[in-house]
Image 1: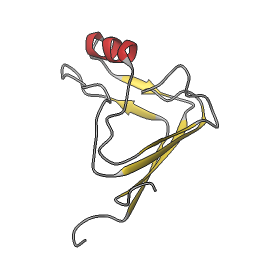
Image 2: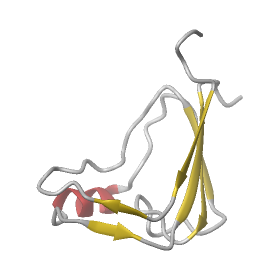
Image 3: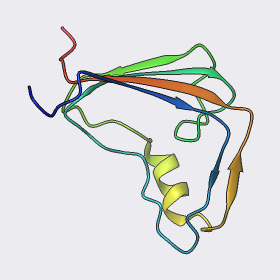
Image 4: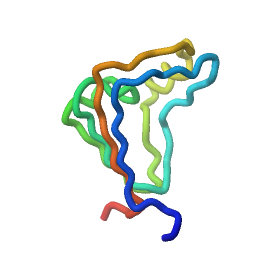
Length: 100
């Protein structure tokens, strides 16, 4: 399909979260791509409990996924200030092709 990516690759490393005084929506979403998400080491900010190093998740296209109720509540009421996420490495592959 013209204009659509066949595959995307993302690496989540140490980073600054710097959106001050701006609502940071929690990570719950659905999209038209299938996602394979993995945690290499450290804590992934979307799932600080239960998404251990060497853990992975797989979400087919148009399947809602993301933070659980507790993380959603914490993110929705968190103090909006600079935060540095350190000692973390996670990855994600996305593809427009469905998991079959």
